[in-house]
Image (cartoon, rainbow, N blue to C red; front, top):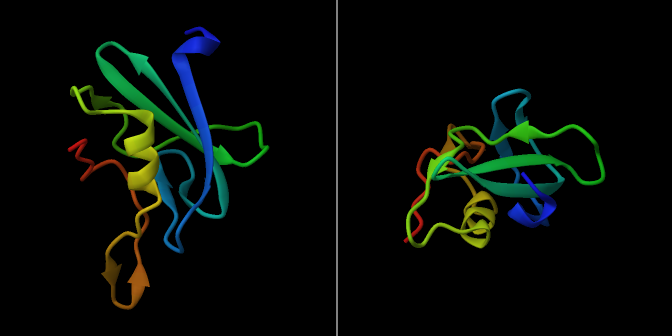
Length: 98
């Protein structure tokens, strides 16, 4: 992977946060990085200005014509479902590029 293959952006998570494989849900000011890998788009997040990256749960996702970094970022900024009064963390399980 070269630096040109990766896209990055920062955002503030919703209350439920973003679900990761390694650390569970993380919340607050986050940085998203995506890159293409074997016909898929892999997504990772980290706390803003931290060094350790975490895989967004259910990443990578197969690339469709409309899949993009921007659409993944918008999805991760969308609040998760509320269960028993608590917002759940967002993953890429229900991600749809359309």
